[in-house]
Length: 417
Image 1 (tube, rainbow, N blue to C red):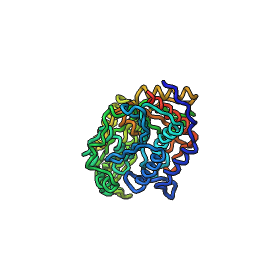
Image 2: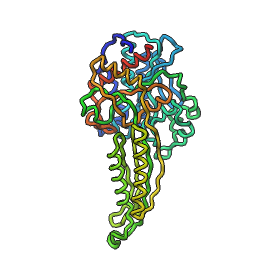
Image 3: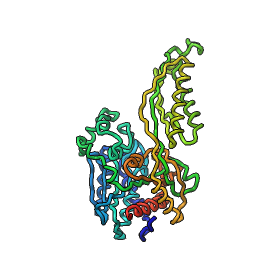
Image 4: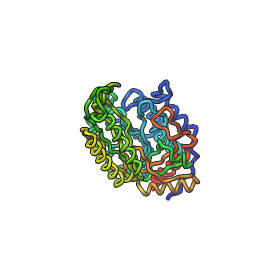
């Protein structure tokens, strides 16, 4: 571990000001923030980031998918750069910290280096990836996935939003280059490392009264849609023993998912949607459709949970004389963070007396894509009450300072090698 050069401390006021500036873009009357990928609000947030990058004198590159890279040039141009950042798009009626804080933390690192006139062998790049949230096109981390080569351009261009607008049209309208998506991919030798700071989006750190979470692995989802078909019947004229109630069957399946996930050591299961047909008070439901989100940080544990859930759903359908079908939506494997970066973050926290814990990230992030092509690491900072993707999402910038400091020290250490 290199000793970080003497720099001024993290400027919490500057962090707060930049966060507030981003939060004004897409601000809603209820206090939430909405910046869906490639919409006007998203483009305005990008313009603000470009303003900050220009003010720092960084060399800016925007790729065909709209990913933004702002480079503080190192003294040795033959060395691969160290990247830090996150994303600026949000979910509908989301919060002001998810993604944005990671970009602001990277800006703070470069601001401190530039202000102190520190020269490093490697370049440091501030990056903001496009379309991290799955809210608009149904698939998340698209910008970083294209950079890492884990998704083919053709797969991306086949996506549409809920209004039927293609991502090709959205990219074209935003001024990007959908016909050149092949150029977005970076080779492993092109990046030394990627470090991302993010709000936890849970309450483990807050409950443990720890300032920093150092991510050892990122949980990955297996998602599928279950359709349960029974028979719609009159609610008054059909005896209970003769019913084929799709909703009660689906309810039992959903409780099975909760019970199975609860028995796992490192995995979780969620059903967040349910659609019932004919959806009338006086009709026994004939059809129910729900979406299953199973996540885990341990590959074997997650595979066992998925298998038990799938088998349990079939058994419930058979016992209730229902028909059930399953449509795969997403399957990803958990991603481990780089052990060297985990160790660097841990050592730098210890050197500064920052309370930290190594932990799993239950949410997906751009770091899990970048880990495919370079050493990647993540820093988590506390989320008040664990709330995220909501207007009530809150992380006090003062409480984020230790995490930002850990990121800054680690980025400098990597760039100095």
